[in-house]
Image (cartoon, rainbow, N blue to C red; front, side):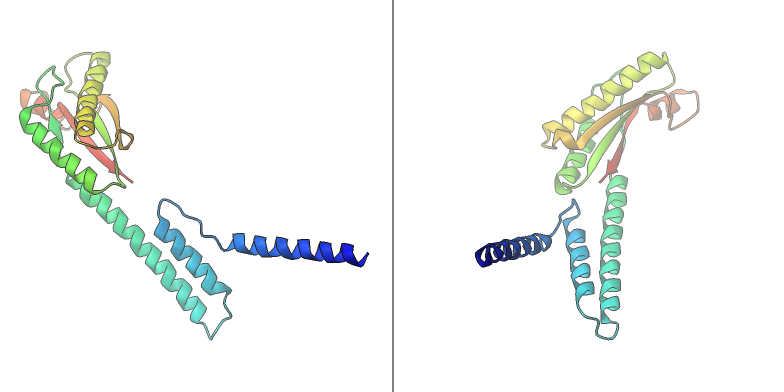
Length: 190
């Protein structure tokens, strides 16, 4: 009987040690540093209070996480403004030489900022049927995507959508407005 109690006690001890060891592992997310900071703040809260310093440490950790999120949002906002639209000739989806330079710059920005993704929005002018313009807008977006992938951008980071003639940049009904509306627009996300 005494041997049985010793074995049970030993098993329980091993279980507690293993379980406690597992509890110390850090979880990681796509924002790995934020997770590490959260775990650090939790550990600090588990320590005995020394006159309110734990609350100060927790507040400091929260501020650090908030600053990191603000920095990432600011970077996303800045990179979005760096993405210029490219334009197309009437009834065409081939990329013009001057727009190839713009796309090369977009590829460079994406290669330098690997945590960002991009959505290419294909647009057309108001002429033509809805169905035709949706298909043409998709072909325009797909051509830009193909160009970025050929420049080394991972295809999982680039998606496309066509708006056809639904989202005109310029609502006027003349050649100048139509030229502005025949475009690919780029939207950056995390």
